[in-house]
Each structure stands twice: as structure tokens, then as C-alpha cells.
Image (cartoon, rainbow, N blue to C red):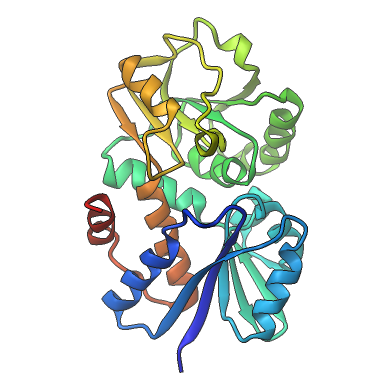
Length: 276
């Protein structure tokens, strides 16, 4: 009997997750189906309950429901407790298990696929949504030198830093601070990560010129097209400019492992998607 899975979001039509999981299933011989489901902005919990009632085994969660997923999941992994955002739900009877694979996906893409070491780097992380919360602790676990959280709302950035501090305060020798975009003038970073949704609306975060240090990585977690941030990074001389397709595949592989107990190979899937 085919086990059913899905990804829930709004918007969702752009999602490559169904294609990725179909390729994983073919590669590993797993009998699953996987579809993209558009949930009303006020109907995420109801959508999850409908899927559970229809016998689905689990689902991925994307914009803008990762914080809501955290609220409805009753069994949480330690990395989810640190992230306070869920992107993977597994259904086991009446239990809803929550996990977050975004951080694992990002780190694997940066270090293994792009070949960029994070050790000792100065990192700028833009955004305070569920994606940003999910990658904060994994970034710190790579012993970066300095993490700067920047947002249009300094209050939101500070809330993210304060929550994370209870998990990393004594574990990592990393300086963490918050900034507004206006205060970034004259500063440079080895890694700049765009975890905002600006790419969806073709907007450019208000970064100053000269933000990229020599040899810098510019990473946009959006995928599927050249975003204004990526274009800006190329013009500003970033050494490596990447979208989030590799992260998407890597975090999907981690979710697939959580659900099926089998870890698929990601390189052939990434290559196939790049050629489309």
C-alpha cells in the first residue's frame, strides 16, 4: 500500500518538493506518493488534521506555517526546540512528531556541495522567519567566528538571538549580535545568507555596497531563479553565489530519512534539477 506524504504552504505552486521526493522514492525503492497542498493562511491546522484523517504519514511545512507547525507538534526533537520552527511532521497514530531539517540541509549544501568551510567565518543572516530560526543553531555548531542577525525589525532579531542563547550560550565560542540594515555600512562578511522571502516578490534587501569580504559566499535560500540579492552579490564581487536548491534537496533527504529510515543520494537529484 502506498504511503502518502505532502508539503503544505502558501504559496506552494512553485515547490519542487514533490518532484524531489518522487526521485528519492525511485532511487530507494520506497512506495510513497507526495503532493503539494495549498493551505488557507488561516487553515494550516485544519489542513494537517484533514491529512491525518485521510491516512497521510507525514508532511513538510514551508512558508508561512513553520511557527504554527511548532505549536501543533507535541513531540519535538532537540533541534526543533532550539529552532522553535518545524518543517517536518511525522504522524504516528494520534501523535504528531515535529522536526526541523533546514539547518542540516543548509550546512550540507554549503560545506559538502559548495565546498565552503564555515569554520571561523563572519556570517550575516538576514531574516527572522521560520527558515532563519531553523538555521541559527546549526550555523553556530560549525564554530563560526561571529553571527550577525539582521532584520527590518530589530525587536524580532533580538527575540531570535535571546531564544537561541539558551542553547548556544555555553556551547559555542561565537559572538552573536543583532543589527539593523542601516548599521551595516562599512562592515564585511565572509558568508551572507538571505533567509527572507524577498526573492518571492523580486525585492532586494537593503544591504549596503561593499558588504562582501574577499572570497565571500552569498547564499539565497530561495531557488528557481536569479533573485535581486544574487544579482547584487555578483555585481559586488562575491566569490560564490548560490541559490537554495541544494539546501532544498538536502533538507528533503533528511526528512525522507526521518519518515522512511533510508537516506537517499542527493547529488544526482540536484544535478537533475539543475538541468531542467
